[in-house]
Length: 476
Ligand code: MG
Image 1: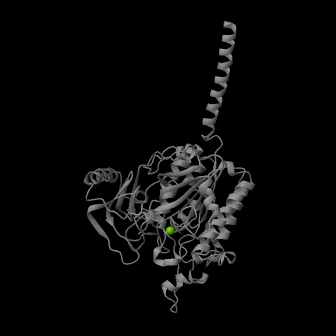
Image 2 (image 1 turned 90 degrees about the horizontal axis):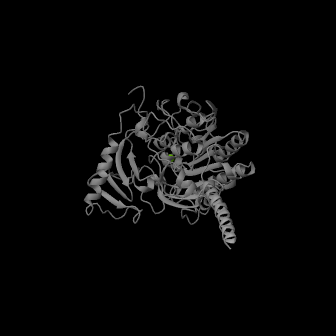
Image 3 (image 1 turned 45 degrees about the vertical axis):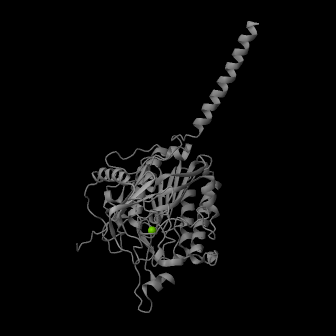
């Protein structure tokens, strides 16, 4: 009898051991091993609003490819950019540092212009430079806006290849006495804007034909992916649209019920679909992390030519949520814990997250403002980001700690008739119950404001004064 019992125990132990081993296997399968470094593709729209995709609630703009990224990957509903306008937002994404630390923001000149003499300092370490240490092939396609002089262009910031426009698509305006500034933006023609296309360090076209630009960015990206599929690669594709003036190719004219703005978004969605298919066709989908987001909220001054921040307040240029919370999707076939993440994330987090996923070394000689989101992406754990800082130029306007956001300075409708207001009692919102920032609870919650003020003071202690790149001009 005891022989049977010991056999039974032996059998039971074998079964247990086997299932334990499999359990361990299952749980480790989700953790990415940096021995096989993944490819990274960042897709970055310009001035696209929180509410401009199907997945984020737009009723008439059709975005099946972005929706698929959101539904089959991860949709992040509280994902922030580092600033509410182009230049500082891009500096934050590529360096993982608040633009105040690199001199890439200013309340006097909010972005770089064609007469600017500054740019992203060589001392900054971009995601591309970090990945070059791991032998990645790197490309920047699209709008740069981190300095148009040669020393600042992508090939001098860690990118092996560059194709795109050096600043916004409405710059270098050709003066025309027959047409007002606004009319030129609402009914644009390619030759109203003398914006160049630059390949690596050389100008190859001027003015850029903006009607074919999304298509050409897509072709360039796919070609780069196909040429470099034998290596790990990083593509930073920064679409120059839907920044006004709006352009789309012939095939997308009248494509959307949402008018020309919808056509432009649907062409970007098409582009995302083409890139995803190229990854699939080349057997790369299982080893490529794709991120989609926008650099700042919609440019509401242009009414139906601009996007929608959905349920969020205000848009581009604002430290209300509509200026800095962006529609964000992560996709990595078979790797991500599928679902909706409502914890905070930021473009500032991309550098440390990518470092973790690729086994890259983080810069250790400087302050980084990003946190590593890889556990949330791979396992669905709670996001490690617990606060967000909202700068307007070089001034701190607002601060989010957990679900509460305090505004110390407000300036709504900044490009229209809005007024800057210093708040003696900060406006306070609970963003979990009131994401639209409609109900100020500051008067009733002095203790929460005190706690947030302490966090702000701590942050301010970490800011050193650096040369400002946006106002750097020889006459200054
Ligand atoms: Mg922008």
